[in-house]
Image (cartoon, rainbow, N blue to C red; front, side):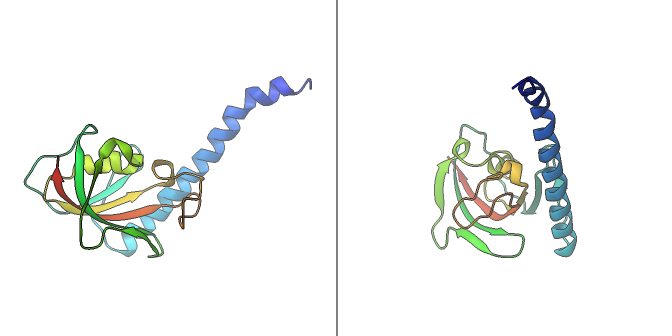
Length: 147
């Protein structure tokens, strides 16, 4: 019991060390993916990478907007975990993972591109459906409309 205060004091450093390791791992995975697929990707301060393949003409969304999109989400090994199919979906931008919240703001209405989302901006260490813990996520996105 007398070591408990020491454990509490060093716990933040332990957690930061583990998180820092995952950030490095994710960055390496994303860099390899970008190189392997010859993408002209931009890395942001948060660790998100994005590619604009078709520049849109309309407005860029803000967190308070609803967006209508087509998308396909997959892991870096190509395993698809979700996609819209033939019909776009509409949702509030502030109701999705952080990688989407940040990344979609780089798109303009009518634009298309790719988001490469590190696990910290996705689902982190949690398994979500068929998505394993600490997964880098790749999304092909077409921003149809900012509502």
